[in-house]
Amino acid sequence: MTSTTIVEHFRHILLWPLQLVPSSKEQMARHWQMLGLPWRKVEDEFVRDPAHFQERHYREFVSFLPHVQHFLYGEAYEREAGRGYGESPIHVVRRDDVRFVRITLDDATSAIELDVARVDLFFFHDVDVVLLNVEIAARRLPLSVAQDIMFRLGRAYPAGWDEQGRALHCARHVEWVSATGEILAASDFEKRERYLAGVCRNRSAEIAAHWEFLLAPMVPHQSKETGGLRYRHLEDYRIPGMGFFAMSDPGAVTRADYVRLGLNTGPGPSEGLPYSDAYLARFEADHCHDRFYAPERESASGMRLTCSAWGLTMVTGASPAAVDPERGLLGEFRHRYFLLFVLARFHKAALLMQADRLALAANALDINDRRSVGRFAQDMRLAMESFLRFSHRYWFHQASNQTQASEIFSLLTSKLGTERLYEDVRQALGAMSAYLDSESLRRQSRFFLQLTVVTICFMVGAITATFLGMNVLDFAGTTHLEKILAVTFVFTGVVLLTAYTVMKSRRLAGFIDSLSDERLSFLAKAQAFLSIWRREER
Image 1: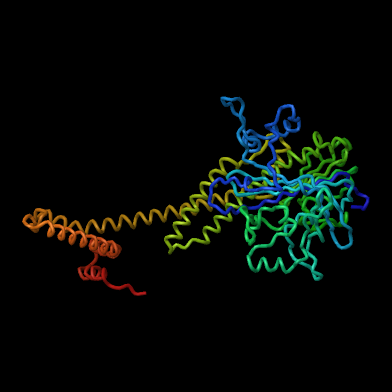
Image 2: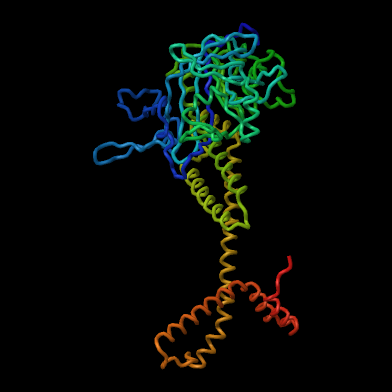
């Protein structure tokens, strides 16, 4: 890569999945309604007047399968007053106060100011997951600078610090700026003690100050600040993202550049690979989508997609048709490919959230505490209900029948490992459900054992009383008070005897089992009878 390689049009979209920690136990909570200013609800473009409905919306809609269309856009239905619209399970809120981001990459460079195209939060009905979407745009940036921005900007907190106290892999300074030039928030990566104290005290990493500002009024789950909606991490400190690079000569991008773009390793020499040749031997096969990439053919398109667990990048030419926001590749990148990315990231976030809650429930289980077992059973019932609704409402293996969209979605899900994660969660739920079933059967077996022992013990007295004509004692000539006292005495005695029999039911069951064993001697059976009252040794 040379210093003359210029990115004519650069877009960087960050999509940060977070787990919501609501303060109430309400199911299917409408989290987006708990946010006030500066957030506002984004109106659905698909229910506007047809005069405002654009061809881009149509092409975006028809590229997905019907069940995915229902998920993304809701459904239309007939009602008495006319045409109605089923609400989409996706709810988007947006803030408009942040218009620029000013970023200083390192000590040797000056600050760069980029446009902030949008800042959105994506909420999902019945799922405690939110996606923060931040899109930035710039023109005529050196490729090395664009790579470095994509590498350093999406850091929720530092991975560590060097000897000089500089945060590793993070920008030196990041500022959110308003339309009037006012600095709304700034990063604090250099405050090493804050991050160390946060992990030591809360066992959870602190979020950088500029990201906390962007998510407000939501607050981190460990924060002492008041907030009706709290969030926690689902993945590591690298915020997933997408990158769009439109260049006059895409052929100037070398294989080393594609490796760094695809794996988001930051800039480097044009020929030097960031990893070993053996590790990158299958880079093109595993990480590249080259349907339209054929540099040896002049007539072929220069568009190339790279995909990794971090995100998705597109490299293409800078022709007017490519950077057209409505009909060009830029429009495809910002809408159709973005929605595919949202679907894949949402699937992984929802499954990670489910796995996290299962782990917390299992860690809190104490099999010797009946109340703990009861709470665990209730948590598992709610988890299984939630997973069932997720599986039937949101989970799908294929998003589109269009070849390229289907291949990109498969590439994304394979890199994220969502299929394997889904099976892991399903099997974990199955194992916990099997445990609860076995625990229920054990309790039922114990109950029937106690009932059987009590029945056998009282059967002797019942048959004896029946043989003697039920009334062994004649109370016909006694007074009413004597009858009441007799009934009270007998009732109390029977209750105490029943309770005592239930307490000794296990030992009585052992004695009955020994009594029925013809192989045991009379002495062994007598010892079994005496063991009913023998104190257990500990």
